Image: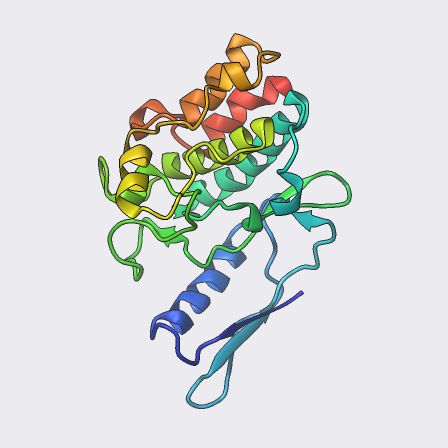
Length: 238
């Protein structure tokens, strides 16, 4: 699959970010992370775009699939396989920071792959995206608002997986954005869920609810520490 990034009228760091995305993805080896199969090629001089090849992925992104309530077993598989992909990234010091439905793909085989590490941050290198985290409204973490540490960490990605799992279970984003930045920041920093998970899904067991709520805890230290720990917690349900 050819990926192209237009550089015209974009941030001057776009090319640098694209180069870093390709470098990071090539360093990751996981069946649950999209594979890069070429180097980055700048388009034009001065560069007005950049392109590279990623493996072809059939299936579809999560966005159209999250409008109905999934079974717990299906949600657990989603969380488990995304967590495995993140575990490979976290083991290499890479944090995704933008786990929106458009960045996770369900293949025709039923397995999942994490995509689009353009906003990723390598914790062992100098960042170019600044303090806090970029991302998609509705899929931010408390750390996006500089709460607690104010910097990305593996448990930030765990919060992102929690959002996707909550949405798959209920059909709703747990902390939706209504157009008011201050209101969104307040609810996000407190992790105020739009609805009680147990009320929305009374069929879930206490242990199943506890896993999702731990992922969505306002304090990073109270969540699963990284993708590997989350995968370990979900593995018995898969």
